[in-house]
Length: 559
Image 1 (cartoon, rainbow, N blue to C red):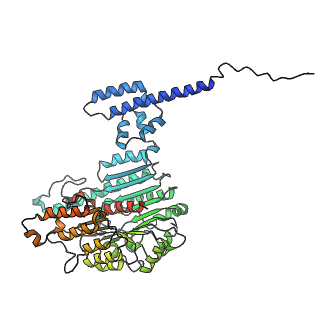
Image 2 (tube, rainbow, N blue to C red; image 1 turned 90 degrees about the vertical axis):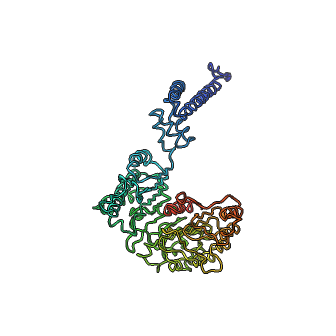
Image 3 (cartoon, one colour; image 1 turned 60 degrees about the vertical axis):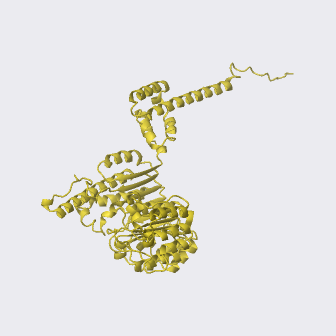
């Protein structure tokens, strides 16, 4: 009989220490990586050294580069280190070598890009370089165009500056210089817009796309597109190319959730949104189309088109485009509840379009029942009081309102109506009158027993921001407002020229009225306060379009 016994086979040499050897190798690699990180940190410190220490900095960079092999570090490691640095430090670090410069524009480092551009020739090469590097992969792109000094007497874009020659006719020479600056601004503006759109035309990763251009300040109630624009683009080729590129971007998008376009001078047409596929339109969360330059009764979006956007959480439109039929569509059960609604009421739109189709109070009630958390933001440009009385329906859940006037003035009755109807919702109230003659501002409390602004502060218990310019605000009323709202009023901005004092306060020789006002308002608010001395320092007064657009963006994001 045979017996088969299992005899253990001898282990190969080194088998017992194989696991330990692997751990030792991993530990040595980790230690080497940590040493490289320490040396790389020393290199970054050298890059951030004082500009005066040029030779020492170069020596330190050379030594660290030789010791750490900075140029041979893996791209993943460099990108990971760059991710902890702010943008200015990334740019400095990328100047060390070409390999680091290539890692600077790695897609993971630039998921979002926010650019504020001056409309000047110097910006074009910088923009082209940045968009060539990032335009094809960026996920969130926000671009703001700012035409600086195009209305000032000093040198504007493309203008040599200087005053007009008195011998050749002062007013005619000044008008000619102003016209040439406008033409140059428009030409550069079109080139910059084309640069942005061309760079992202094939970007399928784009999720948020926002464009703003304060070039609309030059429109002068629509006359710009008919005169200056025809000189810059006589055949309309650039405008058509811009519109086609915009539609191409929409048609190529696969992940777009946020689309915002404001005051961009005919970039959006009534047929632009039809380029969006149904799948993208049904997942869109924010839509903002603000452009008062659309001729006639044309609208950028219709109620039928809005039916495709069933997932909208926030919407921003011209008030004349927001019809009763749109309110009915948003109240339908197929749509998710709308959270934020921003409306622009412009005198140009009111002149060319009718208010007859606006939602009634019943439509607002239905919309509020569908969306209990709905809040509304209204911006009114030069709107007459009788038109505002038609617009301000009692059932609007109005949280913010911004009045900006150049010709018309807001009446005390409008302010009183707002404080009565929206006392449960109102948090932001901005009142601006950009008058040329500052000798006599309109007084809202004239021939009234109570000041409407004081009543606004008393009734609207959620009021957190109050900004006033171009209207008379009496010192004792300002003190009353501060005491009524106290520390809940986070922002109280009143320009110095808007504050006025009673004769009795000025006649009192023992008390300085200005010092007393500052002291009493500061005590009421529970924080230091003073009147706005430099109006140019606040965009809410100097750039109402830009302020409204930025506030609308944050208002829509804060859901």
